[in-house]
Image (cartoon, rainbow, N blue to C red):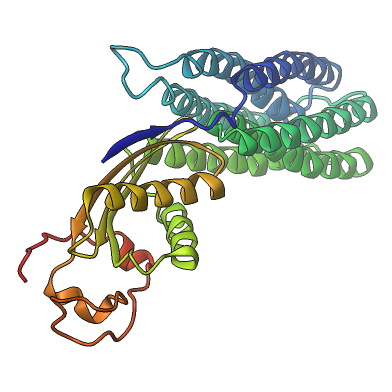
Length: 337
C-alpha cells in the first residue's frame, strides 16, 4: 500500500520572509561591526566582523536555497527540492571554518606586530548591541525553523546565537583590555573565539553532511516508535524495516506492518490508514508513507493477541515492544503455517 499524505503545516512563504529579514539584518550588523573595527583597530572586533561577513553571504545563499526548496516537486525532482536547504547549510559551515582560519592568522600576526587600539569603549558598545540583535534574530529563526522543519533556518539561527555567545565573551575580554591596556590580550581573545567559530562550523558541516547522505536519525525514529508503542492495536503484531528520510520539511517513511494471517485486503488497508493517521496527528509534517503489509507466520503466535485463531500454534505471551532495535530490524518473512 503506497499513499502520500500532505498536511499543510509548514508555511513556505513565512520561511522565505524570515530568511530575508535575517539576510538584510546581518548586512547592517556587519556594517556596524566593520565601523567598530576601523574605529578601534582591534583584531578581536575584526573576529566578530569577519564572522558577520559569513552571516551576510550565507544569509543570501540560504534565502535562495529556501526559494528553491519550497518549489513543488516536478518530473525531474520527484521527491521535491528540499535538500537545497542542506546545501546552503553546508556552505555556511565551510565559510565559518574559513573565517576562523583567517582570524587565527591575523591574531598571530598581531601578536608579534601589535597595532595601537583606540576608542575601544565605542567598539564595546557596538559589539554588545550587535550581539543582542543577533540573539533575538537567531531565537526567532530557530523558533520558525522548528515549527516549519527548516534545517536552514535552524542552523542559521544557531549560528546567530553562537555569535551572541562569542560577543559576550568578546565584550568581557575587550573590557579587560580597556582597563589593563595589555595589547596581547586582543590577540588572545581573537584566538579563543576563532577556535569556537571553527568548532561551530565543523558541527554544522557534520549535521548537514549526515542529512545529505541520508544518515539514519535514530533519535527521530525512536520518537516515532514511542508514539506507535503507546497507541498500538491488537492487530499490529509487528512493525519493522522502518526507514525514514527527510527532504526539507517532508518525511519519507517506509516500513513493514505484520497483521493477522486472515486479514482481508480491505481491513489491511484500514489498519494502514490508522497507522498513517497516528503519525500525522503526532508529527506536524508532510509525509510520504510507503507501507508494506505482511500476514503473520507461526513464529509470531506468542506475540499475537487475536483470539480464536485457527492457525495458532503457541499461546499468547506478550506483544512486541516497538523499541528502536525492534523498529529498525530487517527481516525476510517466511510464510509458513
